[in-house]
Length: 141
Image (cartoon, rainbow, N blue to C red; front, side, top):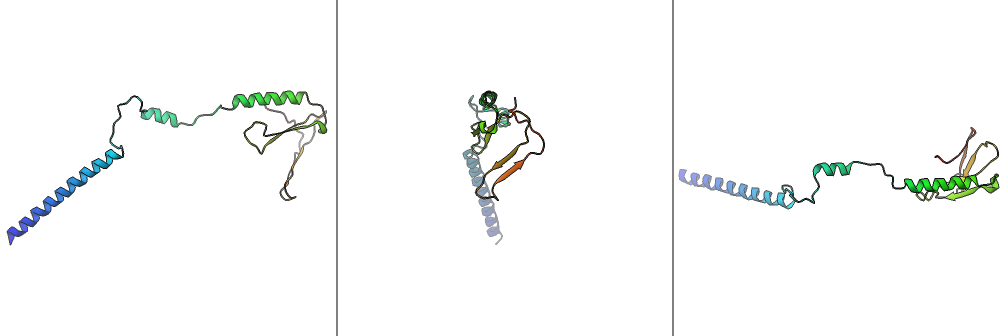
């Protein structure tokens, strides 16, 4: 009876070693498949330092030249504008980046209080803003 239990115990140990070996082999295959353990020696692979540098946020100056050129154009148009509210010019989407914005060029003889009203579908959706202090509205240089 004792020999029988020894054989069963040895058989169980062999089964455990076999299962463990297969599991290790499969784990190695999965790691290789998911590129966890791969080491690249190619020159075309980015280093960790370069990847971190590439992920850092930067200030975009893509539209700066265009914006400055448009601002200069609007300053010239304002300088050549005749005085009076009837001579005002409205430019929709002046910087070509936001279609729901507008720029109003108005020249007055004296400093003027400004009141702005954006008409909505009803009086509840109409936006009105009255500036209490005297304002000089100009394009920033």
